[in-house]
Image 1 (cartoon, helix red, strand yellow):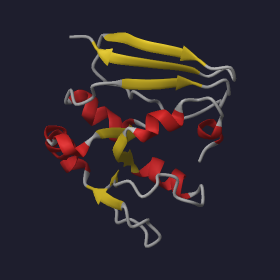
Image 2 (tube, helix red, strand yellow):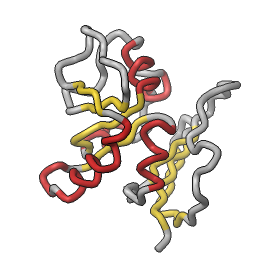
Image 3 (cartoon, helix red, strand yellow):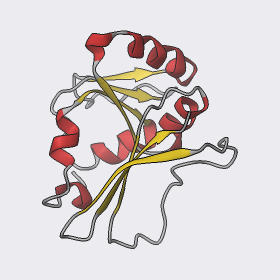
Amino acid sequence: MSSAMERSGLGYHDFYADIETLVMGRATYDQVQDFGTWPYDEKPTYVVTNRPLDKAAPTCVKALAPADLVETVAAWRKDDSRGDIWAVGGPASTAPLIAANLVDRFELSIMPDLLGTGVRLFPDGTSPAKLKLLSHKAYADGVLSLVYVPET
C-alpha cells in the first residue's frame, strides 16, 4: 500500500470494510502491482483496459474494456447484492462514471504531502457539477477527509 494509506487514524479501514468491488484504470493497476503485494484482499477488481493483464495478475483481478465500463457499473448498481463499488484512482475509471451520473459519493482525502506532480482527478472536459458536503473529518496526522454527494 502507498504510504498515504498506511497512515494510522486515516479511517481507511472503516471505508474499505464497506467496499465489495473495485474498478480502476490501467495506470492505477500497474502502480498498485509495483507495491509488490496485492493490497485489496482478494476483492473482485476490474481493470479498465484494452490490453491483456499480465500473467502475475491476482486471481481476483479481471480486465474490463473501456467501452463496457458504464454499462457494467450501471448493471452492478441495480444488483443489491453487489455492495459498494470503489472507483480507485484517476480519470480512466472515474470520468466515464461521473459523466453517466453513476457516482453517488465522492470521498476525498487531502494528505499533508506535497507530491509536486500527479494525475488530475477530474480531466479537462469534465462537466461542472454541484456537490454537497456530507461530512468532513480532520485527523491528528493532518489528513482531512471530505465526503460529498451530487446535489440534486
